[in-house]
Image: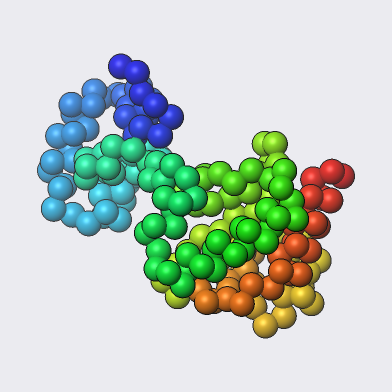
Length: 185
């Protein structure tokens, strides 16, 4: 059976090999616990059958009808699921960066918009209900920019900005510049 990269069924041969039962058996297990919530199903597979997180997630999501982990083909598709304010902010963030660094490729990875240079991720963003997270993919960049980031909530690898952020172009460009410099060294 040919499967594409994002097809959850791509995990099935390894699930059968690693956990010693055919998929028919595992689909039966999922029918027995179909009334449980997602976290309970994941925990059951991990605790009772020794599943890894990835294999448990693939089986649970497939059993719930999600045959593919890929949700968006492009940036426009990603934006469609968000309201106009978030769309405007994200468009501006990526436009500012790509105007200064046109060689960066805008891709969708982990169902989020990311900028890559070759095989290296340089910048990414994700959207929550009440904020947007921006990420330079380099903790050292965040540490070196600590003064620039005063007033923002800085996590280990991300910076939280408001959904209606008045995009700080200088901050974004410095983040990218430092990250590109680190990639060269």
